[in-house]
Length: 489
Image (cartoon, rainbow, N blue to C red; front, top):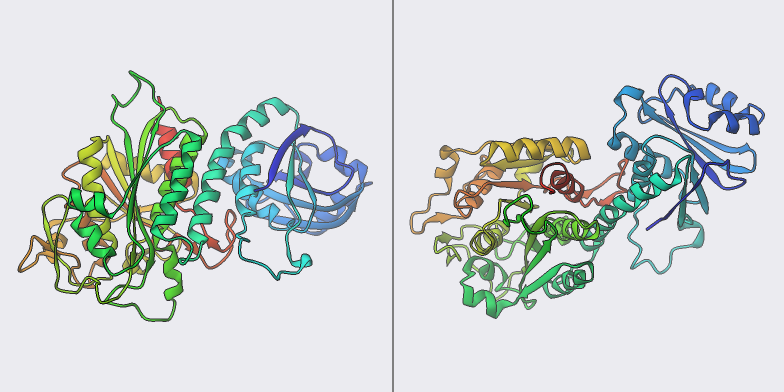
């Protein structure tokens, strides 16, 4: 991760400089006068020729602009009245994308300076663990980012509060990027255990403990793999006695299928390598819990992740099998590739029984049907609670991890009626994301709940302002914002 430092506002003598510019005139940018004077007006003339106006998302790159600088990136903040923390983050990400080969980068004084730094840090993420032959000229050089500030103390404090969120995003991206031969359920559980260093209480359940509890649905998914399943429970106690929430935690539950072949209902070979990120819901929960603990959030929260590998073998679950869930309800397994909802069924029931949370939010790369519905631009979600739904939607808009609420209803629920068990695990192709949510809702037991189907959002095939292509860590910033805006004491 980039090392971010804060320094007094002075024009750097070397390296690259980022100038954040409001729409309506370059001269309104903080520190502009000194920069233009130091270059003999060259920067002003260059930006005028480039027709740079400071519009949101607009950038201009100047090479060797003078005053000892190697590069100058001007990035637009948009209209001053429309400036938000998210706009600033996106500006930071857009600017840093031009500067990976620089060794030193400074950001000129700007509103929301720490948020600009956050965007730069998020956009600069790169998963390099297995690159061994990359040439030096292909590697990024940038390791430190300097924030120039008139009030260095306040900017430094703001960045210190944001750094744990960046750490949580990086953790999730690392986990989702790992190959499946490395990140087995047991290994992912071990990485969760390392978070005790942040103050989280972490408990790991193996197959024997889950069998004793009666996790028939989760264990059924895992039975075809030599890599044994795990369930991990992470608790953060930050509210303090007598604080908001009356001792009931917020609960976040993640689907953690570390590799999904589809089981006996095997997937096509093309693209199956992508199924290493079928644990992205669990990855987001883990990153969120790390962020909450890292910033000492004043809230009680619990994160639970069900970790399995879905493989075909002589011992694998078959289409037609009936499993008994932890809730006591039975499920006829029609398609073994609809496995994530089976994992969530047992973990959600355990969550409400053990913790009596204020609400439960589950995250899962659950259905291809959600990608057909919303593409890769917005995550879909379902909820039985209008207040929770409104807050989630608002948090999505504020964080840039947008959500769209999808319907639930009895007509969809009837599609998962089984002839021989309490329900079946698929309801056919029509409304596939909805019937999956209806299945999960049967294990909520009336508790305020939301289900986030992030199948289209966990992995990006192109760069965006805040993420290079690859793992996005979608959900971490969204849920951190939800907690910060509504649930901290």
